[in-house]
Length: 360
Image (tube, helix red, strand yellow):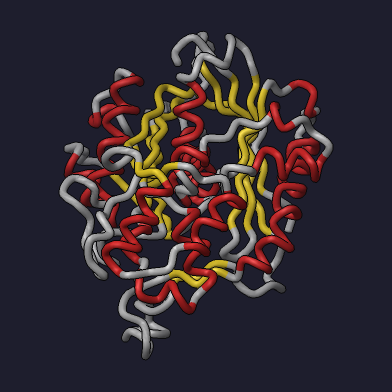
């Protein structure tokens, strides 16, 4: 498909993120699995070396086989915390916003929408909507946001991505499921948010040229949530919870094409790679900078990576990484950062250009 592209720019009023609890190292996580479930964790240790995830934040303790999120670490709790941080940085009150858009693959419940509880927690009485989407939820939500911000007298729009995928893992399924080991060692929990405003001509940080597309419908899904929908309203035999199925061989085969499509969309908008200070890709794993650098002939140092510290945060990954980069001290006024998102569920891609400003 030809990606949806927009040449206009929008003001970045504020960003924020929320991560549950203290960081958990890979040895600590593997020790919990061994101690609490008697698992042989050598496969997990081997995957860690390949994936490069050193720490992550989790909404569950992995003390029992099936767990709900810990107090304060539910999906809407994390989303609300990230939004409060973004609104605080933007010096906005919830009442200043015209719309709130959420995106997540792991809502607290199928209904009511997760975002309605988020709105209630931050005391936002306006309109809200939710996308059931994973890693490129941010890019799809931006297409909605730009339509709202293009209206006359538009007020700020807030976007928040949030995931608590750890609660879907069944530790006892790990011995017989290589894809579940990949999921477990790769993923983290958390939320990230951004508040966008219209181009008012003042100095500040900017979001430019948002785009969104997909490779086409000819491929099977690379990442799937099993059970729980109208196709499979009951749990399938042999499965104890709603878990993810990960065709990681297919994802590895087609993942590069997603980033290549994103680069082509950016070039079609008139940008050249040499004008970007950094490239922020979807945080697939802690080695994504080295992998993409080798594939596209770009120095690994030009990629910003935080997955080694927080894991793959799915729908929250781009907003969390952008927030942390904005406050890392690595950017100077006017620096441009290319954001490249990629999603394996049905091979979607998207992104935008971030221009650093004095508000960060």
